[in-house]
Image (cartoon, rainbow, N blue to C red; front, side, top):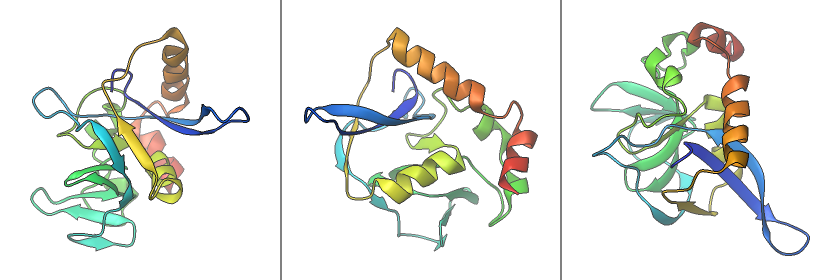
Length: 159
């Protein structure tokens, strides 16, 4: 959570954990922190969902590629106001990537949430306070630099 990044690890040749993939994210704001601990991911299948789209009923907000962490905590995409409509992107949810901005869930780009959804189901997920390092700071900056500069440009990558 310290770096607002997700790291997926694999087992290296020496049987040690090695980072395989990184993604930028937004986690919970103060007072609405993202849960910490070890969890096992699975697709979220409760509530109103349509394929990979899921509706937050209380707010009318749609998300894509939702993987349940625990209870209401999940990895999911940036926010949308209409089902199946990339043009309905909630712009602040895009611009907030890389900083604490959620009510405890882990928000990512559609593609990054899709990577977690497609590749990490059933696997252990450790969420913790994290730490800062120059190496992670450099990777984080590369991830941020790779994002389209505007929400409008991001939408164009989706259509």
